[in-house]
Image (tube, rainbow, N blue to C red; front, side):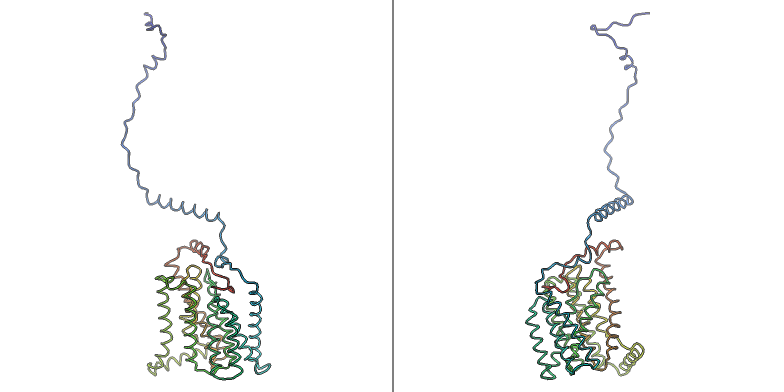
Length: 401
């Protein structure tokens, strides 16, 4: 046997070097060109969108959710004298309604209905001026003086004028006393409240014992109330530049509907054939005989839907005030129904009720159409939208301006 070769340069040999030499050489994979990223599939994109939506929902749920009832109310400082006057006004209205009820039941002195008319008309005018940011003591004093002059003098012109002004004040106050409604049931509540205020004003209108033409009374009160509401809404809705395309379209459609509804009966009476008029009268007579009342078209088609849809829209956009202005077609018509001597108390109540139900249904359909084009889809998204409807307005008995 031969010896192992000596180490060169005096360095010892290592047996591991031989083992390392005997190992096979490792192959290095060649570098590949960078491949472009594969685009995400539709399923992956949907999964990512659901994950992002779930994360945002969890973040929203973790944050405190504002109360819907308090979301549409703006805190406004109230003067010290406002609360006592509010209580006094409520007591005056209740006393006036009680006096009118006694007069209807033929109990008490003969001037009781006139006293209730003066009290209610003065209070409603005072409340309207306070609600719209005017001078309540000035306008309330003028209403008191005009009512006393109409009652004490007994002039038919003054009595008719006092009745017209009372109907206008009550009709406009019924619209201005509403607050934004986030949901449909809140909008329906506001419409009922507006009609109740108008009914209180109608009691005062009857107390003045006016001798007027029914058609002229309806046209005059509606024209004055609608004009006054537009003037007030012009300030509340930030002028015409706050309308936008949607608001301008709503105003044009509402004005056209109001004009067509008012002109239809007059055109039918003048230019309609006798057979058509007789058929309409027969249908009205059949409804009065079986249902005890017939709804008023102007309330069903214009007034009540405007109140329902307008208060619902006001919780989201200020253009809702322009829609609410057409609600005077419903509130002012209550006085016209009460003034008609051929209409009893039960029939007048049923007329308003029969007009409220289909009008509210039309308002609901308008709300659904509005949300279908402008609101989110899905029940959960609608609930989130309702919670986010936070356009503030003053409380019901605070000044709007």
